[in-house]
Image (cartoon, rainbow, N blue to C red; front, top):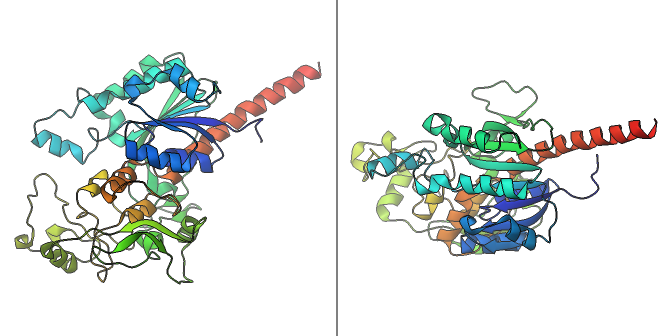
Length: 393
C-alpha cells in the first residue's frame, strides 16, 4: 500500500549514517542526523540531506522541529554509544577498575533518548545497541524504558544477530521498538540461516567473508588508495554485485603497515585460527584481557564483529588471503557491515575505522524499516476500512 507521503526519520547518535542508510533504502526520507563526532557528521552529510554536530544532551525537540521545518517525524532512530555496554569492553573496564554498570557515563545516554521521545512524540522510536544493554543489571534499563513510556508507547524488545539478515558478520544487537499508534510492533524477517547449526526453512545460507570481500582489489600491507577501480572479474557473488551498484570502484581501501613480527604471525596463522592456536612463544601480548588479540578471519564464515577498535590495530581482523598478509582495510570492514561501495567515509583511516565500527549495518536497518512499514500499512488499511464503512452508512 502506498502512503500519501514518504515516512520520515530523524537519527540521533547517527554516526556515519548506517541506520539512516538502511531506512533510506527502504523508502524513508531522512530529515536530520545528529552526532557529536565531526568526522561522522561530515560523512553523514555526504550521503543524506542534513546533519548537525551537537551533543544529544544539548539537543531539544524544539531544535529538531526547527531543523526539519516542523515536519512530522514517523520514526526517531537512536543508537547511543555502546562501548561501556559491550562484551569486549567489560573485561577491560573491570581490569581498570571502572564501572560496567548504569553508573558509567556512557550508559546514561539512553535517558536522553527517552526525553526526546516524550518531547517529540514520533509515531515510532527505535533504540539500537549491543545485546547486553537490555539485560544488564537484571534488565534495569529495559524496565526503566517501560516505566518512562508506560501508557504512551507499546514497546517490544529484540535480541538479534545481524547475520540472520544477510550481513556477513556475527554481530549480536539489542533493539527496543515502540509505537504510539496502537499497532503491533514489527516482526523482523530472518532471511538467512547458519548452515552449520540450522535448517534452511526457505532462507539463504549466511553470507561469508569470501562472498563479501573476495572481489576487492588485492593489496599488501601499507598499500591501497582512497579510490581504486574494480579489478576485472566476471565471478561475483550476489552480495558483491549488490554492493557495487552505483559506482565504478571502491573508496577507503588503504591498508595499514605492520611490524615484521606481526607479519610473521599473520603468515603462520591459518584462516579461522587464533593466536592461541600457535605455540605460546609467538604471542607477545597478555591473554587475560583480550584472548583474541590475533585472529585470521575465516573465508567460509561471517566475520567477527566489526569494532571501532580497528582504529587502534587490526590484529583481530587479519585477511584470510595469505598473499595479501595484512589486516582489513576500512572498505573491507564496510563491506562486512553491508555498506555499498559508493558510501565513502570522511577523514583519515583511523576515523574511517571508528565510523565503520560504530555503524549499524544498513541491511539490518532495512529489515527494521521494512518491519515498521508493514506495521504502518496495517494502520493505514484499518483507517481506509473505517472511512469506507462510514461512507456506506
